[in-house]
Image (cartoon, rainbow, N blue to C red; front, top):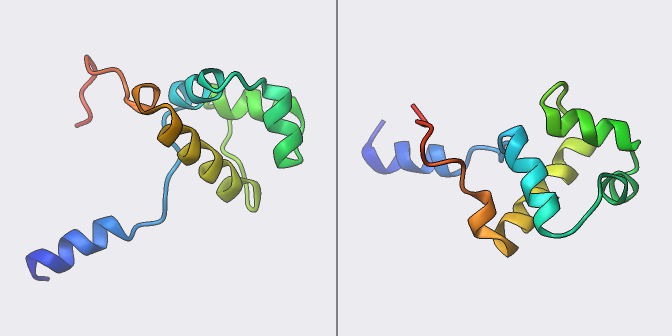
Length: 90
């Protein structure tokens, strides 16, 4: 695989969920409650709480909608979307 193809492969990966702690931070940065997110996505508040705690991952079609919501919130609140710099990403 050439260098550009390798970069393209990384850039075209399907979007993934951010870390659970970032999920909650993004929601809070936009002053959304867990209930508001749950109502938006058509799930129970407990599901959102579990997603934010990292206890479970959302299933389709909620997963893609949740990823889209968080991506939009990350654009609105870029400082919130950055994981703690003291932790290594390796």
